[in-house]
Structures are given as structure tokens and as C-alpha cells.
Length: 423
Image (cartoon, rainbow, N blue to C red):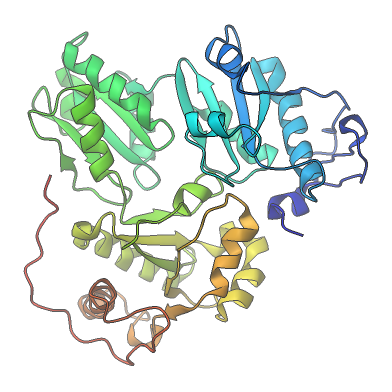
């Protein structure tokens, strides 16, 4: 039956009708069991705004779904919600549900797509969407790590370390402002629209600005994951609207690493012309590490494709329960050697993990890894990069398409001039 794969792993369910009688046990946490108390409240169009937007002294967590009473998935959702609510209630959170089939106007008001299951957290006047898998451990960890403010001001070593720790995982925006200035306020208001998508930082004195390589007040920089070269905001982009437009236009990364907490931000509905390359690389293996280093260089060299090319890096060791499933669906072996493939990401319209898997019943085009010399990666780095870049260029030029046979050897990289993405 369709359901979140995480629930199959984590929960033991009693097939009973009432919420109080559901038996939920999280394997690995034997002391944590559902106590039978229903802590969730269903909201509708009449009481949503007052309950959520008018909330005081509590942080509303709202689960939007189209799960009905007769759905096979119902008890799995209930287990997730009730265990989560049981843990976070004492920490100042209330859990609510919205049936998006019944509450169409409310679904549209909150920007939820039809048929989508998602969680919104309403904190300090900001709406933050959760993109991870639906299991209590992952969700609660994410919730408790959530920044209190949309902008983190760096004025200590701890905040500087936090900024650097996100280098390969998050899109980061950092700006240098006068303390209390209008420009800082506009930046903070713009950042509110990107919480959980983009991590925003600010510096307000020259000491920390210099440590972070920023020399002029008013400079705002955006860094994509795995990229040390920033996108610089135009000097005249200093209002909330202008900054929002600039961040939105530049925030799509070329390469991201898949994790439990960003799962459905990576596997979101694509743009019509977007291409996705999946890269299975064991970072602790020599060959996997060599491919990873090649991809990091290609990430920088292909910045002009940001928004139309997405390279999704997957370390199989971080998804051990998925390896057999991936190998079966793709028809490849991912434990022994790295694999790169162009896959079809159209019609990804659900937050269900099983639907993520089902897209791979479609055809993929897999790169012939024998064309790379991974035994001597430093000596053959230039040749390896040339072959991989030729393959990517063929994909982006529609010379390689899904459903068509790939040529045995990619043509050498073209000599066309590669420009930096215009701001």
C-alpha cells in the first residue's frame, strides 16, 4: 500500500479505529511509546486564522494532507503526528491538521499544492515549510535546530562557525550593514520569505566583515552549496522586494547533497526545462571520493546552468535501507562503484517517499564510468573533467535525452565561451 517508507521502518501499528487505541513504538527508542492522548486538533476555514496567526505563547505546527478516514495510510500519519505532538507539546508547540480535500480555500491561502502532504511551522510571524521525511526523529531534530530569527547576526566565533558549517549543505546569503540601518531591516524582511530554504546572515562591524572577506558596507553575497564563488547582489538592490527577487532568481543550486531533512526540497516539482543528474558516491571510498571531487569542480564550472541543471549527490552509506531498492529500480550497482545518471524528474507531485521511488520506474541514461580513470584521479583529473563536462553539455544541449541510446563516447568539450551567470 502507498505510505511513507519511513513508517514501515519505524512504527509498529495496531489496526484499530480510535486514535487512543493506536499502538506506536519507535524502534531504537524503547522508552518512547504513544500514551494514547489525542493532542492534535483539526482546523478549518473558520478557525484557522484565529488559531494559527493569532496564536500567543505557543508555536503552531500544521500538517496539511488529503488523508481520509478510510485511507490505508491514516494510522501511519496518526502515529507520526501523535508521537511528535507528545514530545514537542511541553516545548511550546501545538500540532494541528488541515484536510486539504475539504478545505480548498484554506489550502490555496497557505500555498499548498493539491494532493501535497506538507508541514508548516508558524513561528514569530513567519511560515516555515518542512521538506524532510515524515518520521518523528528527523522532524523533531529539524524543529529544535530551527533558527529563532530569519537572519543570524555574526558577532562571535560560534556564529562564524555555524556560517562555515553550512558551506556544503545550504544556500547562504550574507550581507554587511550598518547596525539598525534601513538596509538591514529590508534584508531581514526579505529573509523571512526564505526560512528553511536559504540561511541568511549579517555582519554589522568591520572586524567580522573582514574575517568573512567582505570589505564594503552594503555588499550582499549568495553562496550555493559546494561553491566558493559568490553571486553578488546589485548595489541598487536594497529594498525587501528587490532582495526577494534577487534571492529567488539565484538561489537554485547546481549541486545538492540529499539528506533526510531536505528530501522533498530536492525532489520538488521541476521547471519544464530542468535536468537532473543523480550521483551515487560513497565519500569514504577512493573512487567515490574522486568522483565527488570532480563533481565539486564541475559544480563551479557549470554555474551558468543554475536553475536548469541539478546534480543530486547521494552517499549510499547514509541511506543503507534504500540501497537494494535503488539498485532494483535503476538496474545498476551502487555499493561497489560510483554511478552517474540522467533521470526523469517530471510529475513529482507528492511528498510520499514511495512516490519518490516510483519515478525511477522511468528510463534513465547512465554514464559509462569506464571512461574515467579513478585509479589515478590526480594525474588524470583534466581528462576526467573534460569527459564529464562533454557529457553534461550533451545533456544540456539535448544531444542526450531520456529514452534515447547514449553514444558510447561523449564528444570532446566544445570550445564555446562560458560566461558567468548574469545578475
